[in-house]
Structures are given as C-alpha cells and as structure tokens.
Length: 409
Ligand code: HAM
Image (cartoon, rainbow, N blue to C red; front, side, top):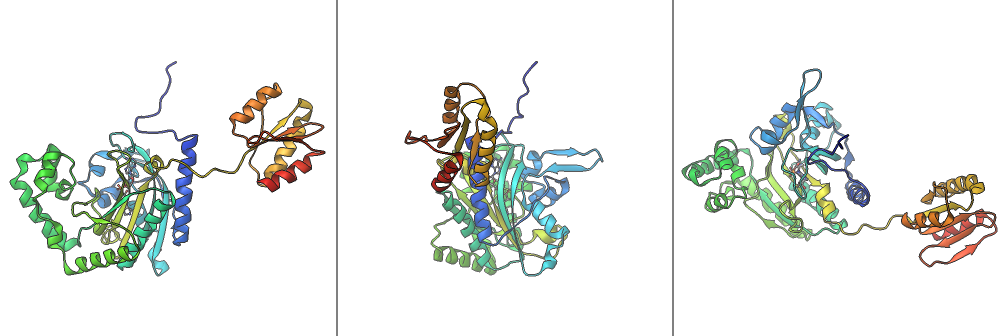
C-alpha cells in the first residue's frame, strides 16, 4: 500500500525541535506573566467574515491564503490565519470591556496560511502573541515593544527593530489618494500583483520586493509628510521612550505591514540570519478595529511572533533535568525496578525504567542512547553508576541510592 505523507506546508515537530518549541513558549509565557498578561485560548475556526472585516478584503491573507470551508451546517468558516481578529471578537463578544481598566491578553497556537512553503514559512505555523485593549497612551506602545525585546533577549536572539507610523485614519486617507495618483501614472512599470494593488491596497506596493516596483516607489510620496500633529507627537513620544529604555531601532518609512487594521505605530523585529523570511516578531496599534467589528470605541495594540522562526535562531537550549535510568539486572527484579522508578519520580527525578528485557549489555547500551546521567542497577546488591565519570558504587539498599540521587540532582 502506498505511504501517506503529510500535507505540503505542514510539519511534524518532534525530538529536539519539540524541546526548542517548548523552550520558546515557556520563555515567552514567563515574560507575559511578568508583565501581568492573562492567557486567552481562542478558537482555531472562525466565521470567515471576521477576517475579511479585520485583516482586510484586499490583503494577500484574505485574497489567497485562507483555508476556507463550509462546515456541515453550511456555515462558511476559516482556519484562523492570525490571532488578533479572534482576540478582538472575543473582547467584544465576551464583553471584556465591562471589566474596567484595560485588558492585557496573550495567546499561543497554530495559525494557517496557504503561502508558498519555504524555510521559515509554512502553511501551519505557530505564534505567540499578545494584545492590549483600552490604552491610548504611547507608554503602552513602548512597553509592548520592550516586552517583545525581553522575550528575544531571553532567547538570546539578536534582531534589528524597525518602527514606523501609519498615522491615524484621516491622514492616511489623504495620503493613500496621493499615493494612488502617483502610482497610476507609473502603472506600466509595476509588477502584475502591484498593478492590481493600486486600487485595492496601494500601501502594500511600498512593501513589494520586486526590483522594478522598489525603484518606482523610491520617489513616491511618503506618509510622514501627511501625518497629523497628534500622530507625529505620539510617534515622537514612543521614540523618546524607546531611547530611554536603551532599545535600538531604525525608523523605516516603508514599513507598512500586510494587514489592514493598523493605525499609527507599526514595528517589526527582523533578522538576516534565516533568509528571506526574516521577520520574527511584528505588531502595532489598531485603534479603530474594535469599533469596526461592532464593539465600543477602544484603542488597542499587540504583536505576534512566529515560533518556528524563533526556533531557527536558537542553537542551544539549556539542558533539562538529568535522566536516571533504572535497570533490573535480572527479571526477578522487574517489580522492584517498577517500584524504585516510581519512588524516584515521586521525588521529582526524571526516571526511565528500561522497558526491554534482554542482556544487561544491550540494556546498558540503551541507557547510554537515552542519555542517562545515572544508572541504577536493581539487584540484591544495588549499584549506582555515574555515566559521565564512569564511577560505579555498590549500596546496601535502594533507599540509600535514592537519597544519594536526591542530593545530587
Ligand atoms: P504577521 O506579521 O502576519 O502579524 O505575523 C506575525 C509573525 O508570524 C511573523 O512576523 C512571522 O514571524 C510569523 N509568521 C507569519 N506567517 C508565517 C508563516 N507562513 N510561516 C511561519 N511563520 C509565519 C500578525 O499575525 C498580527 N496578528 C500581529 C499582531 C498582533 N498585530 C497586532 N497584534
């Protein structure tokens, strides 16, 4: 029978990679908790219109990357391509705004986008992300960026931070008209995708990687010249705070992001070490989205980081707890082996009881392969072997071995 293979763009995460995955998530969680964010577990499936109305009708995600299907009840649903839309929906639907003050939420999990798979880009990938609802002050923008930087620093990942402001809704509207007029005059020189974007999503053209498009947009009007005083002031404050926090950044006026909901601040943490898919974490403000989706007028901001991309940048993860391997020397000691293993685990020691029977030599080999740091030989005269030094010691009884191990580990 023919072998069934995984679907293109999907991955099995196993072995060392799972350790890296957990290391990334655990590190992020620790930092989210330090910043007093609360976890929210959001559904993987949402009404497709949620993403059309938030991420944006004209974006690549909605145009060509969503996994959309009809469920058995005839509902048109999508596998979530990102987490912000769901967080906003939950904020409105669960009336989190009635809790007073502001809400700081974080999430973790799989996202789905039908993109062309390559290193660092998959059709199912995983994000850690956080959203803040109900804060207008630029303190929040600076603190959010600081939190992302903390996560990256804790993972020992070096990146460059790029920031930009897209201005508020009003100034962007004026700018987009100017940009459209500029691009229309030069339409024939744009790539096929960008030709279609002129009407639908002209800002995205600024972000196009095709050389001819890049060349044309070099002289395009820049948003900075159209910003309202309020937007300029906000951006200045954020820059001041970032400098005060010793966070290096560059202002990239071409940074626009691929989702429609952003207003004012946008940022990306980028690396050159993993090829073309260099953005490891990204986010910004979306002050109009909550209202746009039917909720109360609520400023908001957030970020998300791609776990797989972070994993690609991690060489070493701190060693876990040392492993103790238990080997009953002959089968008469199997039950005792089961019991000792349990006692060790009850003491919080990571323990592997060799489950295979056979020659002692073959089981020692297995202990080695499993990476055992200590081996307990269960017999009338139990022994403890330190695998790194090779030292082996005979004990009167197993309890003494347990005491020694508890001390060492
Ligand atoms: P995004 O830039 O679309 O933003 O995705 C955030 C991060 O997810 C990217 O920087 C990247 O690391 C990772 N990522 C995206 N697509 C893929 C893929 N196909 N394969 C692997 N990793 C990928 C958002 O999703 C926004 N929701 C961020 C946000 C939160 N803005 C405000 N709040």
